[in-house]
Image 1 (cartoon, rainbow, N blue to C red):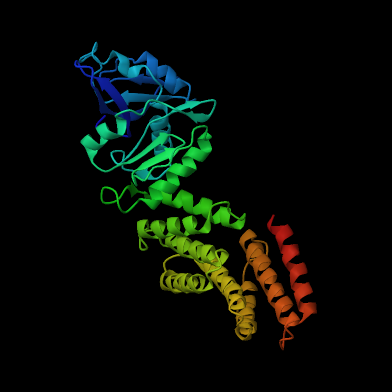
Image 2 (image 1 turned 90 degrees about the horizontal axis):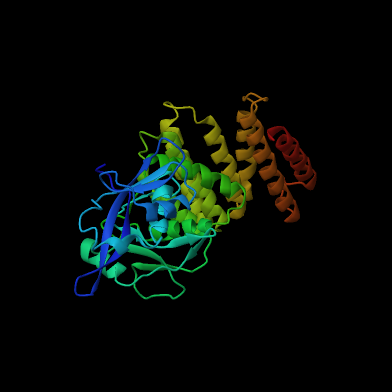
Length: 365
């Protein structure tokens, strides 16, 4: 119960009628059944907010407020009248379930109500000012259609769907990672590895993310990963970063990170089996040589890759994947070389390799 997963910004009315922003920390717990609820630190139910959390459809989630609701009960009776805790609870749920990185809950705060799976307005008066008094600089997400010059306020347009809210929050957390509270986010190994897999897959499917954002995220993952403790994941990050730079038309950086990946793989290949990754990197090298119009080096590299592919198990799915990539890349090289009338590159070889790539693609599927 000493853990804080998030903060609910609220507004209290003082005896003199003045309103004051206040912060209620909370942690997320699991219930024995599928019902959601909100309770205080002593287990006293908060019916108004329990309904709001139930409406989020997060089965089995219990929000424990880290304060005693019986203290100054009459004074605070209006505090639970709205549903503005829904956005901070939803963000904390994403954080807990590795859908958002492990951001500092005292540096990333939100307020907002969810209705029909979209963000709707809530009372904002005094909330940010009150939070700033408690915590200093923090990132504050809230529903509003108006832009602001304040670098720490992030209005999310009213009506934004829940999935889009998650994307907006992730982008802002990543972009502000190094300048709030000496580092906003601890990505954690579990989140990092899961997201690496997701980004690797999305690159293959022509990711909808902007490449600049993807590249920034991959650099943060490289910082998170201990190369000695997680060599395969570290290599995957280097390899994926090279792919991302290549798709972003930055051949020089793609080549740099491809070579860093090759060097790293060779350094650690005695400690883990990285044959697949090394061959993948060699095939990617052929792609980069084409981008640089350095066709002279392609035949010798292709011959070297082919001899290594012949030593692999032909029935293995990874072998089919590598051969699909190899023949597709080589076919493209022959096509471009033949068009430019370069010696040793033939249109017949291009067609033959493309047919082989299609064949191995069918086996890989």
